[in-house]
Length: 417
View 1 (cartoon, helix red, strand yellow):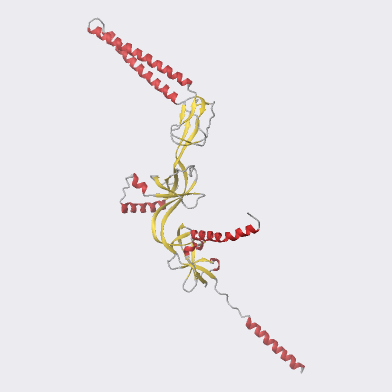
View 2 (cartoon, one colour):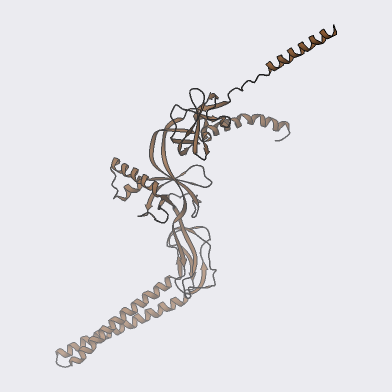
């Protein structure tokens, strides 16, 4: 009887174990959820982008042009000055004396000339009356010509004396910002060489120099020629060549390209050592104080053509590996596909896709780390426009605005003002 009971227990136990094994059968996990969006299709302007350096439109070194002791300084370092403004005065007494001596020498030369002309006229008259010799006529003719030359020499020395005296007042030849004084009053300047006293820099407008590589140069030149033919510009006219090429610039700390200018110069040939051509843009800089300073790093972009139906995707959706840039796209069967792309410029946080993408493709924009090419996913449709930088910024500001009342209430509860 006991044996039958043990046998029954074993049978029941085996049945229970079998039931447990059926309950642990492997079930595959559900497909990962990802967010997808179709590319944003809109017209954009295609740009070429460069890095450059700002440079003042004009800068002049103010030097002592005559020797002497620096008498006084008439400006505040680091301020604006107008053209012709007096900056320094060199002791003028020595040059005033030289001017007086030169004036006296001219008067003496004029007196000699007057005497020689009188004697020459007298000798001619006597010679015609048979009362004088021909030698006297020739003599006083020579004396008159020598006296004329002496007058001219005296006038030149007088002009030089006036010029040296004027150089004792050191003025600026242009309007701009004056630097600090490099020599203090009381020092001897201009002895042996023109002493550098200060510099004056004109900041308005500001120039930006940058380089264009050969490939972009040929492309831009081709597009420019087409635009010239289409709009009927005359390339020989300077106004037509400059007014049609706009430039946009941004500094290292600025968002985007807030400064607008024009291209006003390009070298006549490509530098064979670098394969680039140097270009120059001009930008207005009339704010006070000026926004642009010489020597700054600048980001420059130049529009080259309009793309009426460009495809744009969020910058976050683009991946990169050894094969290059790519996007992950969900097909009609919800399978992930890897699409190699050729990307363009950035527009408001959205990247222009030039090749590798169609207008109706569903691009994975969130959950990329959970998606694998060839694997199935569960897509959730979102709007690509909501992922632009401006849209994300507006959403963040709205969120902060909604959170501010509760923060104010919490602060009051904590006893904060």
